[in-house]
Length: 537
Image (cartoon, rainbow, N blue to C red; front, side, top):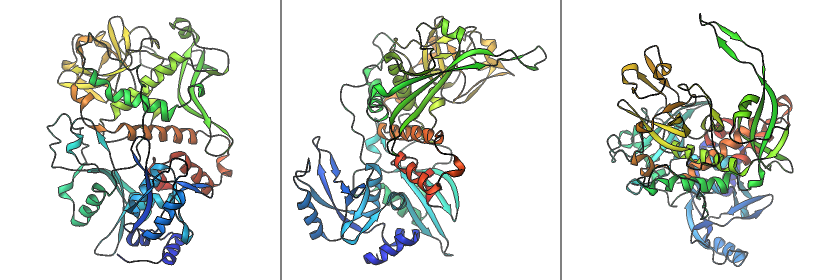
């Protein structure tokens, strides 16, 4: 590796020389300080550096020893120690810890955009001299069997050449039997086995699969949280099934909604215009009906400064008749109201189970709050003649379960009971031929259209007899994307959604560079591909 001088590094940073930074500096070893916290977890030392928090780095060990002496005894930094780590790993660590890297003696600061480049990008130069930039994101796993799959050996890749972002795909360790082991998540169709990679690609894969550090900074959940998670039954359900959802619930309380008083319910009077179809199938609009829109929000101090930023979580609109039929009362006066405690718990349970269900799906992530929280308050199942209302005080619901439909086992979110049947949101798209639709389904004829029953991941709900509900062990105890990773994605989804809805700036007058910097502060380590599109291409 070229031992570039600080002046060359400064020029590469000033010119935005991506190729030079990746080729000459990404694997350069730097010294920095670490410390063990009160729980015995090793964490990097961050210190105030101008307006930022920074991990201090240097190429010389004696300089690092001087840094160690200067911070020893400050706050909780009783015994900092020195480690030599490649720059690309330090960049990932700084992103996950929400700070920058500073080579203070040389006056060099690695800002977040550069950290994203160094920490999440690899360069391959082909024989004809063209460059391809690969975005690499290891996917951390947990659950039974996770220890047999070394950390970092499941990775999401995307490639771009020039200014166009390419498709993304998973690269996986095919020494594991993914096709027949039910405890392993299902791989997407375009997943690529590591054994099929070219020699240059394999070098990239192995580099990210075998980091010097154990991993990025993990969210540390507190004890005694998530007690509201339950499952129905007479004790036959193994309580180990609840370990994952409870852990996610705990992280939600800590990192999504740490201040319960900041959860609010905004009431907005509105109208609904019903659409009906006549006997010929023609659409007709009826007279508008008075209704109320309920917007679930979390209010927090904005990263932008003194402004208070409402983060919109979910919204549902109910007619006045619906409100009268609800088993509990919601505020109807226009304005912002505290979110009742029972609804807070329902929201967190619904979100916790939703994140847990998605953690077994490797083809995407948690980026759409609205779809995952649908029917939080009420639903009109496709095979029901009356509206269903959730009961926030019934802490058995919602929960993840399996719907046995012919030869398929469809994941569903069970919202509650109606008429002796479970009301459920489908969690995957599925089309079932009429002959395979269970005869026990209530109002079965209402579900079959054109010779089949179509169920949708992000829309609709159905009633299912309890006899057709099951709890596949692998769904609860098998390998899945780690709780920390999923909650970080959810946090960034909420931030990105709120950023998109901001109305305090007119788009045509907004300063794009300023807005992007603000967005980076919101996103932390998540939304990497989105940030790449904005900043690196």
